[in-house]
Amino acid sequence: MILEFLQDALFAAIAAIGFAAISNPPRKAYLYCGIIAAVGHSVRFLLLNTPQFDIHIVIATAIASFVVGVLAVLFSPIAKTPAETCLFPSLLPMIPGIYAYRTFGGLVMCLYHGSEGEFAHYFYLFANNGLTCLFILLGMVIGATTPIFMLKRISFQATR
Image 1 (cartoon, rainbow, N blue to C red):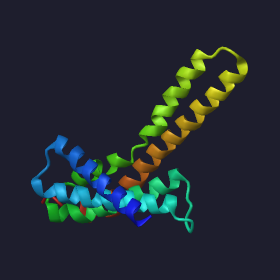
Image 2: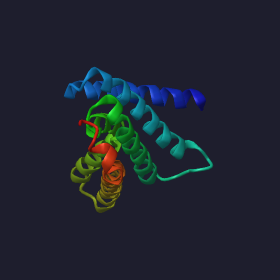
Image 3: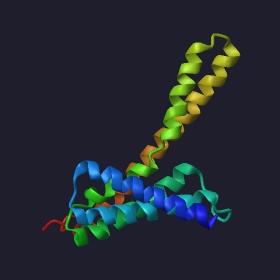
């Protein structure tokens, strides 16, 4: 489990640095994006895979997004960039791509099959994955933006 934990953190950091490169932040911000993404994704990994917690993916993602938001606000004055510069690339590795993929797969299969039983099954898959994806994204938005408003003094002084 420790190796999986470290791999999860490493791959999240690599993905965040790659996503950060698209928006061309200052060089100093790349390190912070990687660290924040590694910590946030690791928190979600622990909440999902540790028997003591065993939390649903929506709640685990919301908590991890809150941690990412707090770290982005705290590191933004050090990097001398707005908190969003580190926040958005650090959140991107947590986007629920597999749920979105399964949502559209369920929709296509729903339209492809004509019998009522198969249609109901694939519609269930479409609705279940779609709602899970939607609520994960909603949890990410609420969890990540809450620290910016809670810590206004720090977050809005980063670029002064």
